[in-house]
Length: 167
Image (cartoon, rainbow, N blue to C red; front, side, top):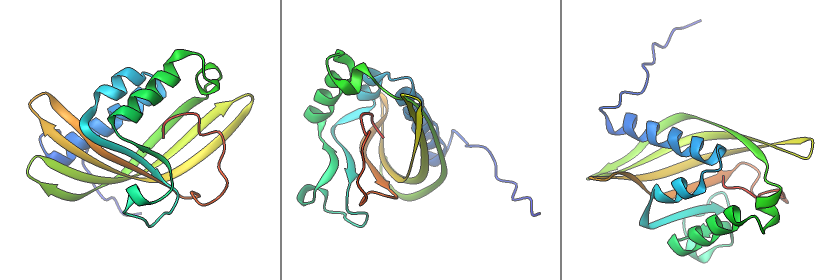
């Protein structure tokens, strides 16, 4: 077996800072700390879960989610109000995010692609969701901010249910 000697994330590099930020986001979502998750976003950011696995034109395609700041806030309110079924009977989730690749670095922004496995437990059943993620992160004086998060589920064109949580 070959030892690849892959170092841990170096928090002094843009990729290392982005990885730490992405792991923080995953932890906030697993803890259902949606207000803190909402604070990670830039005002011009978009959260996208496309149905078409190859699309890049999210605005003109049908998506599971295509949330700007207003829609993210409405989603957070629905999850935290207790009045929605997705809030009242929320799944317990565990995310694993890995395979990080820096695909773009321009000025104060980076794009990082990764893989995510999400296990969701609800009513005695566990569902597994796998997807490829792309995070666009802007480094600001106030800290990193999400500009775009795209979740490309590997089975996005199948009938999906139980998406009562953020991916």
